[in-house]
Length: 637
Image (cartoon, rainbow, N blue to C red):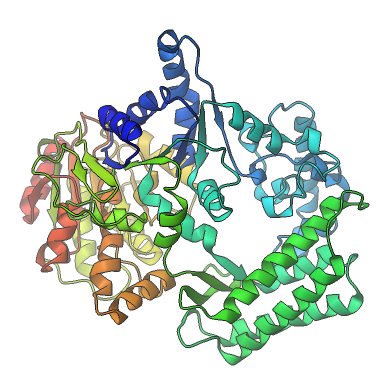
């Protein structure tokens, strides 16, 4: 991997590298990166990996290469502005917290927040004390932390910032200081969300660089989709009106209130889901009112000038209205390249939103990701069905013109890019079994089928706990937990009943326990050793029919004569399944069983084999007695 990256740098050719857990891929890409004559940027999807790079890997490597380079390479972390304390907002945090700002991002029932004001005030006091001591203003350095409501009172999103030149506190700005450090560093560590925003902002945020390393690259397209997504909510319009009320005429404020009311009615009358034939009449009227009211408000506010009495507050008001106006115009255009849908919360909060997102971000990535720099994208999950083509297309690269080489560890060439599978240090056929319950009926209804529930009980009892249950829905996870609690005496931990870090810690500490949850567990749990020796997956993780983006993308493929299911749904399921299965073997000493309670992985023609090829090469069986026997041996029975 080091040699392949070095070659890609020298030849200025983009590179995709699949490197399994335990290969040391971070060291493999950091080593040649530190030898590049010019800035390098490393982007990660998770905070955990970012911290690992900055706190452990980079300090060790920088010290190791110092004798070779004759100097010690420098590195810095670059985060979005909202991660940093804003001195301008800090100055007004006390006076704002009990009034408008307290409710800027609050739910409609403001009365419930009145009882929170005292707690919020205490958190802001602690933030003020920390502000006098911190040298970076980075939220991650605040220990113990504060909740999001408190942090919003003292941080500034990028869209609200007036810029260092117009802000009276510009010379003291923590976010600007972090950018200055990044511009001077040899290597900058950032995250996919900021990288996505940088591309959409025409590369004006991340410092210019020659080499971009994208770790956890399978996440990038989704992060770019999220960054390109926008929404309209009644709460957002009301917040914008409050922010702007001292800067706009009463008539303009009244128009904003009427627009918020119209959107409330339109969302209430429109079913949740994708909008396929233009905005319904009530939503069309509401969005038209929003566009008109926000445009009038923006005209009234005018330009933000350095000699304004309060340029920060004026910029906040203008940015909020500008966002709403842009989103309204985008929805009214009804572009074939956008997808719109109504989103309604199923958690009881009552939140409703009109959302718009791009149908595809491959074009955005093709235009914004690869120009004037070499890109190395790596992950444990880059090949689907044994090939890089699907992931390459999702990242804006053309499909490879040749088949992969017979030796997966030899580079394969595409058009302007090469690929490499470095394999894994794990002996998957000896360390793990992939068991597919092929005798179970094909899953039909949502939730946990009775047969799958019985199979789950047998598997868990055979091992005596040590089970990570990955479920396709919260309902299925809850049913599984209730079933195991009724049929066994094992400690059953269910996502949502406590914070995830607490649940994972208890799962690691108690070998008799089981941890059940939904999609965030499919990637976010790392439990090496014998605390996790059985991973159960209830069904293949295809996108649900009510996932608007996936449904729209599949429909677009169908309309062009292709198969949306094969081109969109199956690759999504393959990535998710590979991530979930990857929870089992996390070190060379791990052993265990992955049990998939969905018979389609064995019986479905075509995509069943494709999905299996996307997984590590475990010893494969469909015999229940083989899986149960292996689990009993692991349990010492």
